[in-house]
Length: 238
Image (cartoon, rainbow, N blue to C red; front, top):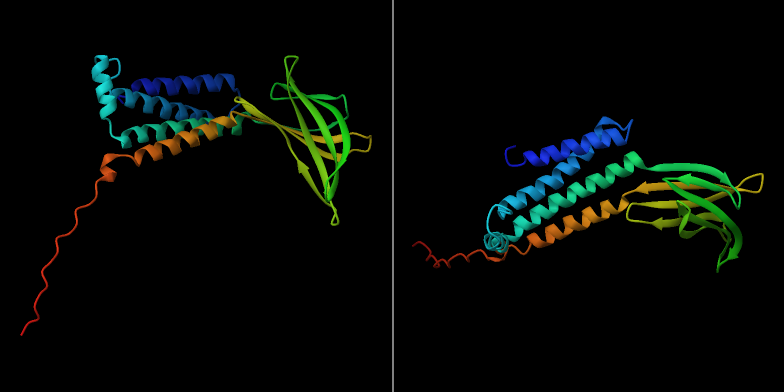
């Protein structure tokens, strides 16, 4: 605790901020977010301790950094990636939004702070299917961010229906638009999803993978085990 007390302070502050900003969020989710920040801060502080960052001259810090075993660097990255992944997973589970609405061309709906506008619907056909394509714009604060297409397909001859999702992927989250069945008044059932910070899951996994790969370059894993000495053949007893 003496070595990572600052990480504990960061984790506690992150938990308090999450509880204040995300009012009504389950306690376990807040504790999980604090745990993610604990792992990130703890990993960085432990690494800084190993290389004497800000506690020794730059040459000494650089020398200690270059002398670190690859396994130590890999372990730091693995724990760092795990913390990032935990934050990403809990962000989706606590902040995601899902709406099922009836929309006609010209209608707009809000999801995750973004405005999704149903622009138009048109028929199309493929090698073995026909369908309808819905065109949607995604905007925020009056500025258009993307145009996505969601399709409703029907394959021949079995008449099997499938849906192609319209996706706008961003660093802070992904917006999904799914064109559903037609309504009696000429509109469409549309499903809108917002998954925040999905990128943190992939980023955390990539950092963990990099940590594992770097660990394999540790010198201790490249030194072969000594070969057993050859034993002399034993003569059969008379």
